[in-house]
Image 1 (tube, chains in turn green, orange):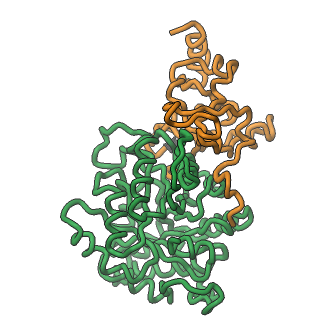
Image 2 (tube, rainbow over the protein chains, first blue to last red; image 1 turned 60 degrees about the horizontal axis):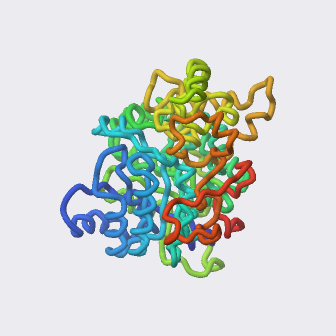
Length: 322
Length: 157
Ligand code: SF4
């Protein structure tokens, strides 16, 4: 069983996942060089699928490479670039190599990337892809053709709690959870109160109990990184006071780290949150520092009744970021 | 083009910006055509909606799915769209593009989904892949009655 699945079902300790950087050339050693600094600090790692609509080494190739190098991959599958045939083939193919965790995304539009002339596919949308993945896990393609033996898959999705209409995002999380998503990585966000109400809604409608909710924090180093995300990344907004706080700090990299630490502490303090997803734009060891300052241990999960929760969710960490 | 598709496009085109997908879902989206969404999503809104409710792809256009969600709570028609809005809509059948959704509604062609979508394998339908290379279609009258995802393991968690 995948470690992610084991933890999502047992909730014996907070889950830590991270985004893997995009790879464009080289060989397995290139992948290993990027993996080594983070491997010991995470439970599972996202093999992304042409993030922000830029072509990179493919989701399935990176997922398989991560698996070969001893990491546990989460293979993202976006709906933008491939139709239902290709998406299913990639998942079933990667499963042959032991890629179990799969995560369905609608995907940024082609206009967000460097090839806006590309044809957009979106043959399936995100929620439909979740259900198709669930069907594969049960041993059938969408057509109804049998897959025997059925691939071992652990199905997940993403959601953006911060995107309008915010009140509807809880319903949408339920739509994906009902379709079979058992873990859900949430979009990067800088509005703790919005996250709080989303998580509370997911606790109320039962999603948080059966789907492991993983809010995302991002490690940045500059004030420009925040304004860039705010201005250019679809679905991300960074409130002006937060940007001003970083821009006006005397030690910007340290203040950026502290902001991320506060957001992560706050997210982990929420009842209904199963762990944290980390996107690292710094690549300077900050991921390891974050995990250690959060007191998260990612040792092999054992007995669910064993040691108490190391993150101490009762600790009052009032977020100062708004 | 046959007669019915022409009439359908002529009436729905100007009012709803109809794209002739052949499987009309206006009744469950508060009369907003989702095929005008640049990503042609059947289950929206996506995560890219801008803070002002406009589309990720076309900043000048309000997100059709955000608008539809707003209209699903229409004061004059309480509950009529609200209940249908959060149903999981099946993938578009691209064979129906350009055909009349009215005709497909009458003939129930728009109620036929791939066997896998309704939780069946071809073997269940008596059509083994070797005999029947094409997708087996299952007919479902009301998608709200369908299991949304896992069929054999719905009780996880
Ligand atoms: S923002 Fe709305 S209209 Fe634009 S692509 Fe996303 S769902 Fe479609």
